[in-house]
Image (cartoon, rainbow, N blue to C red; front, top):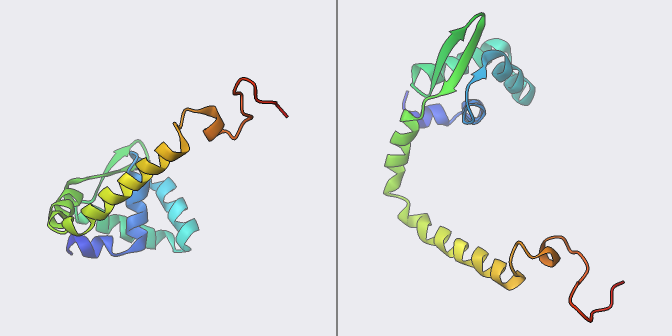
Length: 129
């Protein structure tokens, strides 16, 4: 199965999202996926197996628990494949960054309490309400 086939399934993508911050127990993964996708325990196990068999996840035992972790190697391969397409959206992301920066400058510094909290104006000589 190629990497895009693995990532084409929303359940497997969600499992990877759960693993991105570190190891997770199979129990936690199963409970989360069952709640979000209303699928059986065995269906979750099958998705975990696809991720393991295709190198996206690793598993290790700790006592009676199975801990899953993300293996980023296949994601790096996808990232390398996508590199040649970035020129199509890189310019747009750069333009977005400029607009965001421009908006921040127009609103004032994000550390200015009047622009971040909507608090009263404390300029000397300004009446307070």
